[in-house]
Amino acid sequence: MKYANKNIILVGMMATGKSTVGALLAEELGYELVDLDHVIIQKEGRSIAELFAEGGEEYFRRIESAVLKDMLEGEGRIISTGGGAVLAPGNADIMLQNGLVVALTASEEAIIARVSGDQNRPLLAGNAQERVRTILEQRRDAYRFAHCTVDTTELNAAEVSKHILMRYRG
Image (cartoon, rainbow, N blue to C red; front, side, top):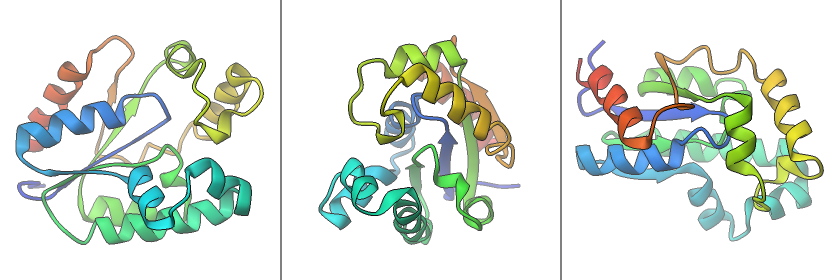
């Protein structure tokens, strides 16, 4: 499959490097960087935590799906999705049709270390370690649809970006 001028869509669990790697890819390719969570915050005028608090996760996922579809209408974008963007029915298919989908993964320990102390993640309210374990288990197969997977546990963002660019450029 040829991806030139198409989008690169980054999926994966929180703290796997989607935003950081997305910024590097956008710079390298001269593409627009779209951080889905930032677009949602801008469009809704409320934080992700506020959206969760006001309407719950299902409400947030509906907004997220609509914004994702809007962002995939163009080409030449690096789209960094929220970790749960793959959960809504139909989102995986629309991503696969509109670019190279790359799943970023990391070990449970790496994710916990990366999110410790982060108060801006509503899904981690309470015991972050326990919540990370639970979410990893719930989403164990959620990212398998991606064209390729890169484990970011032992790689820096530049190395991850290099792996993705090699796949993207064929």
